[in-house]
Length: 347
Image (cartoon, rainbow, N blue to C red; front, side, top):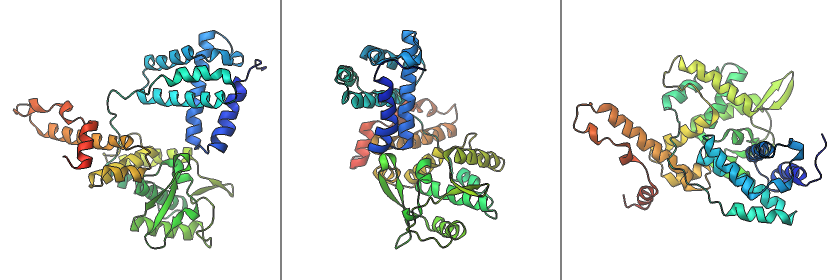
């Protein structure tokens, strides 16, 4: 397929394949997110201009087209958060392209005028009870090599509230058992954060090291978790982890009805964060534990906990009770001002 005489696709290639992963050291998830946004925009331009993909040019990447595409996301029912993420991805690409083609600057300046949207409603975060987490981990068979590996993986993922990619990126040298045991996670953008390890988890990790990394020093730069296929060692993949959780989740539901239908890696992260908050950990510390860049991102746990309590009160209040009419969800909505007052001690 012959491409038009234009810089668009070379710019996209270099942005996704060289600039983001090698120069910006962006995570694989970030690259995939930016790629998905650009892919969706290209499909929109293709349909809007009735041209094949190979004939899309820089001239078609106008501010009007991009703004029209962003508006179409609303029509397709996508959330404000998704719209903001896609806008940020396109803006990052245009910023990159404008350094190499000055004609792109005008489009970039127009896009900069479009502000991020504040979500109209606070998202309710999904999380599991402690019973559900324990039931899922309990489905692993620690008497088998694979089952023991899976148990340690799940315990560590819950303990640290790590993202799945952060788990897969853990190297032996990221573990530290001197003094208080801890592990260094490498978050988005390669930002490291140190998370303490619970004693029970540490004992399982030490046993795992003897089984899977016998004789290797903790200074080794090799993945902590791996799989073996046909005698060959391969890195554990995110896809394998998702499949693992679906299987263990299905088995766990048979013994614990609290286990949700869909068990996925980020659910462990949400659950640990919620349990820390419910146990009394300050929201700012939860934010640091999770590696959030902004405290606002962590506010979903405060809202979800408040909403959970509201539902519990509603469920325990008879319909004929005078209090029933007072159970208004709006009264329990966590606003920025309420959180601020709580954080500074006014409430």
